[in-house]
Length: 309
Image (tube, rainbow, N blue to C red; front, side, top):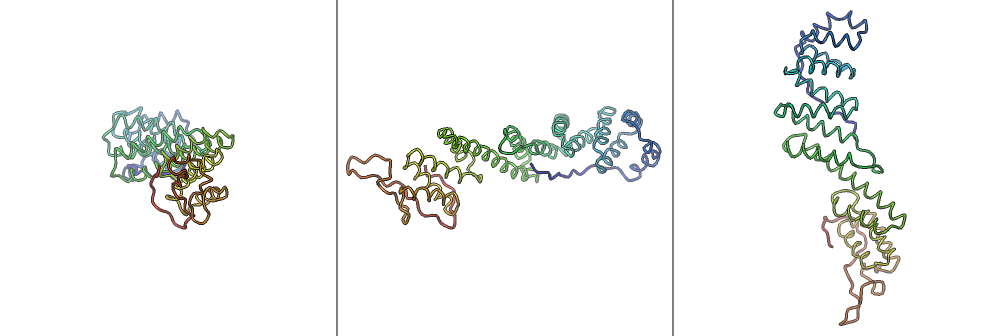
């Protein structure tokens, strides 16, 4: 979703060691070596030099060259500390060029082989971002959103006191909003097709499962709207009362209130129920219609979140 790229504090060697292969190989690089030639050259160089060449390639945005260098380290010196660093940088480089599947594969290998490494928290976080960046718009299937939530939640659970966990929690909230938005898209489609039972199910999913998202007020308003279409006036009034309690200044409540009052279900001045508009049965003792919860006029400020049904 976001194109903000997290920075990784890479491990570099002293300047003298970095410059040495560059100075001695100027003619070689100017001749445009092939990938096979670079691989052959890397096999003769110390892994720390190849690693720093890879870092230089990342900084120049030569991501394929960087990946080649990091892969060569893993292949030539798989048990060296530089191979550990190269695995993480391989994942980071693939992430930078939006090759998320390759990045996840590299990061999974790093996590499996080095669970106690000092950068392990970053690896989990970066892997979660690979899923997060692939989230599609609310019109499409949200399987990747669920994958992102799982990966982000793992960061929160494993490293609760880290900055990565704090950012992961923020992104989880955004993912929840994404899922709620997807449910609303489907619910609106069903409602437009007059498939009211299916639409009600989608809206209730938003209300019950995504209570902290920005879509709850609309879900309540659309439930009110469907109940009115079905002639279920008591349900409509009760749902609007919940909307009034939680979002009294919200545009969705103003819409619901307007629909209720236009049909004479509530008194426009007091918000009280009109007896003749209720679909409830009369009581055997008095023969009067229960008033039900009041649905007050819209206010300019909201209250706190609490369910009344």
